[in-house]
Length: 333
Ligand code: DC
Image (tube, rainbow, N blue to C red; front, side, top):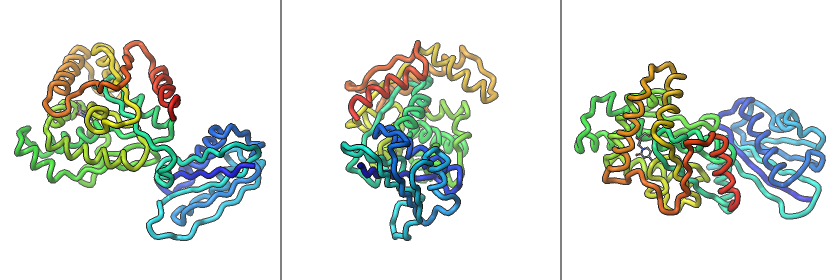
């Protein structure tokens, strides 16, 4: 018999999140330990006392783990404990080393279980953010969109009519209040106490982000935040300088690119879906101008790290790119 441990966290105490988190955790334990439901004898679940809206054991039953004995209980309140956490202990038939599974925020609980970072760099429209999101979901690790952070700085500059000169941008960098939070696994970007996740996608913010990200005072602040987030858990980071400057020791590095016409088409489709009028030729010119800005700036230019795997996505579907990168990672993890 094997005793397999696992834990995960949720973003907020609600039935939907509890159901999804328990199903994800148990299915992952099942997959990584090559179990069938019939192999499982019993599952003990516990939750931190801040989870009150749904029984994790009921979520397990609903997820198809209904033939084994299930039990769930609330844990005592422990000062400093990881909040909104669900833990499981699975007893199953079979021998061999159990593969314990710690997902999302709970990955912090077992730093001894391998932590790794995936750096995905590349120009805008290369598909890297879609790939990064899907990859992080598949690998059950965090996704950090670093472009969103520079976009938030740019939005602040636009809103405060900050001129793009060193003293003005430095003053802005000093007082910027930027927070990255996760809701139901999705990144939200907060600026000065307001959720700006949608506002930062406005087309005029793109060019301003490219300009403001060239200032070292902005980059230093963003890079420090990015390193802190990456130090705490396994994550996929997408950006321009992750493999070269933010995490030069990242375990996995990829440089994702595509020709500028393909990138303009992809970005155009995205914008059109959001209701913007799109001029493809102008978009391609803007993309090329941003490429020039991003790759010729003095501080951390967009550049492929020597040890990054080059992935040209011009003629690949998103699914093919994700599968290719995931394979490369799973060969080693
Ligand atoms: O990936 P994106 O289009 O959301 O990024 C917006 C701008 O931010 C981009 O033009 C360059 C800059 N950026 C950067 O300099 N370094 C990063 N790690 C991420 C983005």
